[in-house]
Amino acid sequence: MYTDQKPATTKPNTLWAHLNAHKLPYFIALLLLVASIWLLMARLTDARKFESEKKQMDERLETIANNHLRLTAKTFSWAVRSAVMRGNYDQVREYFHDFIREEKIRSVALSDLSGKITICTDLNFEGKPASDLFPGGMADGKEIYIIAQDKNRIVSTPILSLNEPLGTLWWSFNADSLRIVKGN
Image 1 (cartoon, rainbow, N blue to C red):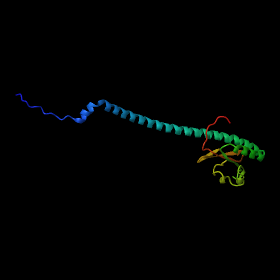
Image 2 (cartoon, helix red, strand yellow; image 1 turned 135 degrees about the vertical axis):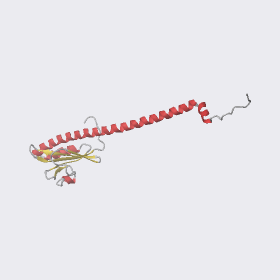
Image 3 (cartoon, one colour; image 1 turned 45 degrees about the vertical axis):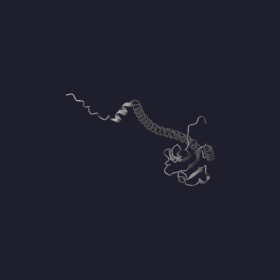
C-alpha cells in the first residue's frame, strides 16, 4: 500500500524562521535592552541616594553654622556686656561699626529691656522699637535665637549682668552665599 502521494507540506512559520536565521543580532539587541534598563535603574537609584545624602549634608551644615553663630553671638555679647556695664556706649558703637564692616553683616543693634533700640548701626532706628527692625518674640532675655528669613539670618542674644538682664543684642546678615573660607 504504498502510494505516490506527497505528504502534506506545512507552511513554515516565517517569523520563527526569520528569528532562527538571525539569532545573534536579536540576542545582542535584547542584551543591549536589558543592560540599558539596568543602567537606567542604577542611575535613578544613585540619584535618589545622592539627593538623600545632599539633604542630610545640608541639614548638618545648617546645624554646624548655627552652632558657630551661637558661639559668635555669645562672645560678642560678652564684649558688649562688658562695655555696657561700664557705661561705655562709645565702645559699644565702635564694636558695632567694626562688626558691620564684615562682608555679609547688614545691621547690628542693642535694645534695652523695654525693647527700644538704644544703639544701632543704622541711626534711623535708634529710639524706635526693636520690632521695627527685628521680629518680635526673640528678645525673651533667656537664650540666643537664630531666625532664617529667606536668605537672611537674624540673631538675638540677651545681654546679661551677673544677676539681671541689661538688654538684647541684635544682628542680621545675608546668608545667601555662606561658604567656608581659609584664613581670616
